[in-house]
Image 1 (spheres, rainbow, N blue to C red):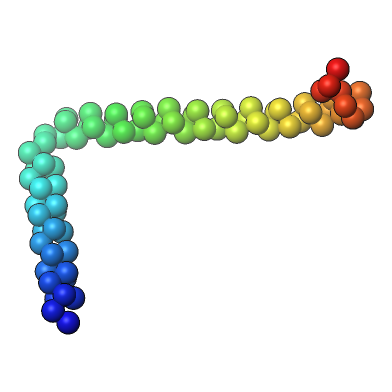
Image 2: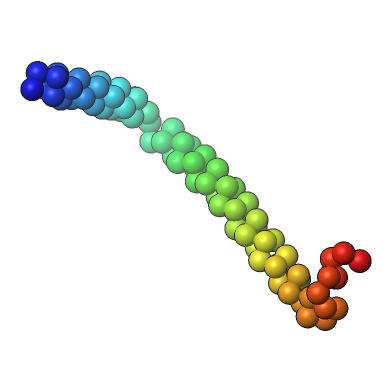
Length: 80
């Protein structure tokens, strides 16, 4: 029972410390700084998601090409 009580206290203390640190950081930013940070996050997410969707499209087109070639030429076309 004692270790459970101690762990609850430790978790509550860590949560309060992290919450206080985050609040201090956010409250020190101006509106324009927040806008810059949000813009950077949106740009990075856009870049990563664009790369992901491009990779998926490439895989899809490769599968389509493999099926078309096996239909047109027959099986074993990739060993030519």
